[in-house]
Amino acid sequence: MDGLGDRPIKEFGGKTPLEYAKTPNLDKLAARGINGIMDTVAPGITPGSDTAHLSIFGLDPHKHYHGRGPIEACGAGVELRHGDIAFRANMGTVDESMTVIDRRAGRIGSTVELCKQLDGTKIDGVEIILKPSAWYRAALILRGKGISDKVTGNDSKKTGARIQEVTPLDGSKEAKKTATVLNKLTKLSYERLHDLEMNKERMENGELPANVLLFRSGGQYVPVPSLKERYGMKCACIGTGLYRGMGAFLKMDLIDVPGATGRYDSDFSAKTKKALEISDDYDFIFIHMKPTDSAAEDGNPELKVQMVERMDKAMGELLDFHGLVISTADHTTPCELKKHSYEPVPIIMAGPGILKDDVKKFGERSCSKGGIHRIRGLDLMPIIANHMGFSKLYGA
Ligand code: ZN
Image 1 (cartoon, rainbow, N blue to C red):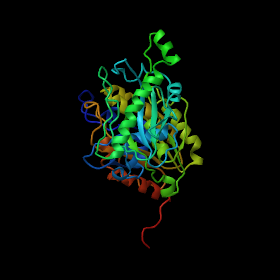
Image 2: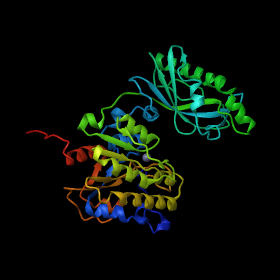
Image 3: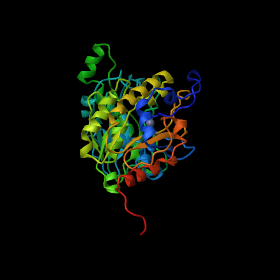
Image 4: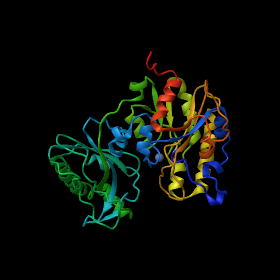
C-alpha cells in the first residue's frame, strides 16, 4: 500500500488515516500474525518509491539504484542491455520558440504513433529507442558506445519557459557527447512531430499538438539479480507504472488485471482475486496499490481513509489463503507534507508457522509494539524467504 504511513491528523483526534480507517480485514491479519515497523531504506532516510522497493526486495539501493529511468523502461517492455541509458519521457507541446505550453500535450491518450517517428533513429552513432508507455508517457533509451547518464534532462517541469538545454553533469567526454546527442534529439523531435497529420487534426479540433519529446531522470541500466536467482523463488508482479517496471526490472512475470488503473478508481479486489487465482503457479506475488500515496500527495486525509478502507476490503480476499500474507508500505507520505517522509511503515506477516504477537490492529503505532519490532527494508526478503524454506543454513 504505497505511501501508507502518515502523521497524526487533528480532525481525526490525533489518529493517522490508517488508524482512523475501519480495517476489519487487516486487523484480523494483524491479530493472527506478527507485526512491526520497517525503515524501508534506513532510519532517518526519506525513501523514493524506487529505492524503497529495491530495499524491500533485498537489493541495497546504494549499490543497485541507477535512477528511475531504467526501471520504468523495463515496465514499458524494452529489453534493456547493460550500459543503455534510459529516461522517463513525455510527449509535450511547445510553440515555435520552443517555449513549453503543456508538458503532457493536453494529456494525450497514446504516444504509439509519435514514438514511431523517432524510434530506431541514429544520432552521432547513438541509437535512439523510444517506446510508448501509458497515456502521454514513453520510455527513451540511448544505446551505443561512449555515452553516460551524467546529464540533465530537457524537461525542467516548468511551463511558460523555454525548453531546458541538456547539460553534462561531469567533465567527461561521454557526458558531453550524450548531452550533444540529446540536444539534437530535442530539435529532431519537434521537426518530425510538429507537422504530423495527427497533430494537424489535433489543432483543427482545438487540441494541443504533441510536438516535442520531453525527458528526465536518466540512468544507466545495470542488471540486478532476480529473486529467482537469489532465492529460487518464482515471482509475479501485479502493479502499474513504476511498480510494473520494478517487477520487470526484477524479472518477475507481469500479470495484467482488468480494472487495475493505478488511479483512485483502481479495482483493488480484482488484484487480490487475481493473486489468489495464480497462487499455485508462483512462490511469491507482489501486489502494489498506489492511491493511498496519491491521496496523501493531494493533501486529502479523508480520501486516504477511503482508499485504505477499499484496500482493506480487497485484503479480505486473502483471509483464507493458505500461505504467508505480508502487508506493508514503501514509505510514509504525510497528508500535511504532501510528499514522502522518513518515518517507518507498519508491517504484518501472517500465515502458517508464524509466532503471533499481541497486536490486534494494523496501524503505525499498534504495529510498533509487535514481535518484528523495527527492521530495515533489506531485512524483509531474507525473513520471508527463510520462513518459506528457500534459505540455506548459515554455518554448520
Ligand atoms: Zn511509493
